[in-house]
Image (cartoon, rainbow, N blue to C red; front, side, top):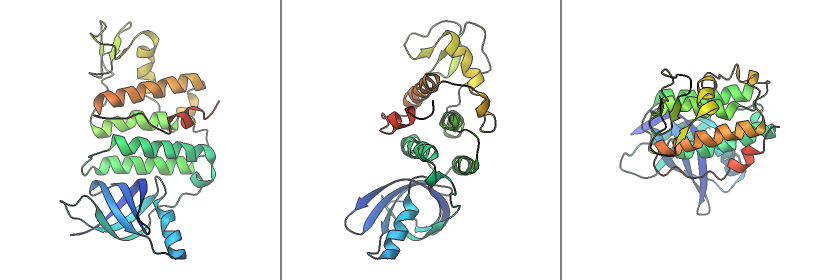
Length: 241
């Protein structure tokens, strides 16, 4: 069956001399892996540029439910980026998020709300002229609600612990080590209120930002099987003062 959908590139791998395998998050089919023919011409080089990480595409492909690799028939840019390719900070964030999403959305079925959240977030990052130091934190925190493990932040009382496994506040320490205590547990509710529009108001040091990111990745690793250490983590940890 021929399917037309919007898709976001998460990763590409060279396959043979003139083919790529591309992992995409799509609006209509969820996560798919596609094989792409690359002509050995200038057109082929131009076509390869379409498959850069987090590119927003319109694609047409043969949907074969039992096939591991779908075959793309037509592709074009859905929304071009105007600043991300030329801004080293935005580009580094983009590369980190593409690796993060590659693992966080593995096996994801059709989820139009998830796709639309990711696409709208990337468009916001591309267009903003405000500081974006906290963008990846907001992105990751708010993504959880689209893949099924939003933390329950309604029942906090002063002195509570936050159980990262059950994603709830508790009055006593859990019988494991995956929890937040004291100030970190208290600050979680405030951090979850961050939005792209207001994140510049949260003055975080690099150390604070990296600690929050570390905890977010621990949280995801507890809720997603085989969630790995990310190769691009060290790069994004060095961004922004």
